[in-house]
Image (cartoon, rainbow, N blue to C red; front, side):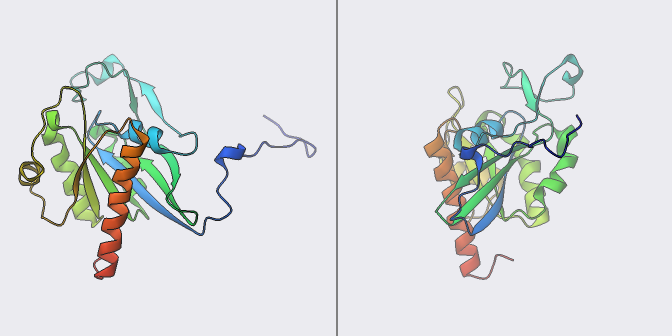
Length: 206
């Protein structure tokens, strides 16, 4: 499309503009295996209209993508999800949701750049898909918390059993959440921010 000098390029919607009181912004990544609720979390908590890169799932993914427990899922993120939430008048979080299928994990490297921390969403029906996710964060030195997304038919386990199964040290927070609910997703992000603050206070956050 060609624009003339007199043409006006539309700006962001009023509700999407960054608050004038914002003084600091933090990049947070929402990670997890396929179908664990990353797009749902970004969409539920974002104060702006979220950017999604979902595409319709096709026959080409059969035998490649592990969709056990997500049989009714018809679309999948192929690049990233993006949203924003103001934690205080001065602090804003930029949220980046990663693609879940392993064939798109090469995109994670770029999404991790500049991220202060991460939320690892897990589904207890497919706990094994979280192992590689957590391993990648540990390799990159990205601090994270684990959020157990509440699926209606998912088994529930005591937090300490999950910690042992995921081989996580006691200082890593594990919380339950419902990614569909804004308040629950926000509480999860607040848990991450408190964890990052504690690391900063002890000099462990670089």
